[in-house]
Image 1 (cartoon, rainbow, N blue to C red):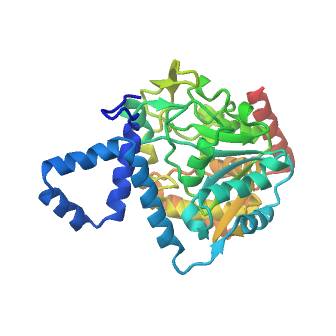
Image 2 (cartoon, helix red, strand yellow):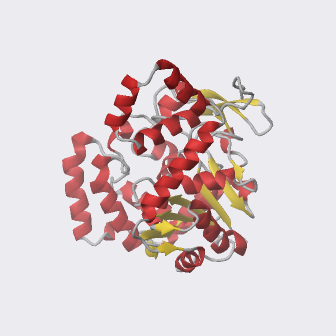
Length: 383
């Protein structure tokens, strides 16, 4: 990193942008606009210089404390032991490999914040011989836009945009992170090295050798802390493992896109990545227009996939075995239901959803023999 005039290492551009966003969120827009008009140019330059220097950390810390005070106002504090007791009800076995999506703000006021949640997860998963994994994604727009013109990815330093809990895990010196310019994964525990080792070697970010593909191979679990079933990255494993048998292409015609990244030793690496099409993804399950599909898939997974909900803090969490989720997604695909919605077909798709629900999802239930055959294919693909 370049140094500023004071000799302090300047933070990367994405960190400065993050602090600017935090300031904008904390200070009313009229106040910011008035300050921009009234402050002398020299004062404004001094403020920007402070953000561009080591002072940005003080600003970030101060805003974080203010946010925590607001968050805690009038709310009961939740401690690590409370979280451990809640998470224990997920019923995870010893040695489990668990991929967790998370939202700290949905759990209530947690004493110690993200570090406390991470400590509770470590106690329930890692301390019992398991492996904890979280998304460390770094997209600044769509996947395609990030690959074409996003900031440089340095596996050692680039922060994740996936929330405070995931970022706390990324900063843990014991954790391991995969090399990927948009969808890197951070892991801690017995199989962390294996989980992230080969992510950059395939253009498909979610295939058998990706971290999520290996969660499936390890008979692991997918969990959401304070999140719903919309932004669940495991959905994409189906697309990459099915290949041409997936009902329609989800990647841009000019994929793979080649991007240079910085590896663990500071070396420059060229990584080829299949980029999701923004057009195809416009009405996906995690988008505002995808609520119908999201609700249907959630009910399907609850009924046929063993999806379970538990209370964690003041929020909700869900957990499902990855293999069961994959099987359900395969069944839905056979019925013509995927996480994508073609606007031209939304009306007929909606009728299909209602018909299937009325029939009790029976058409989507597979026999144990079919399940075993599918599992065999996955194992062969990852061999």
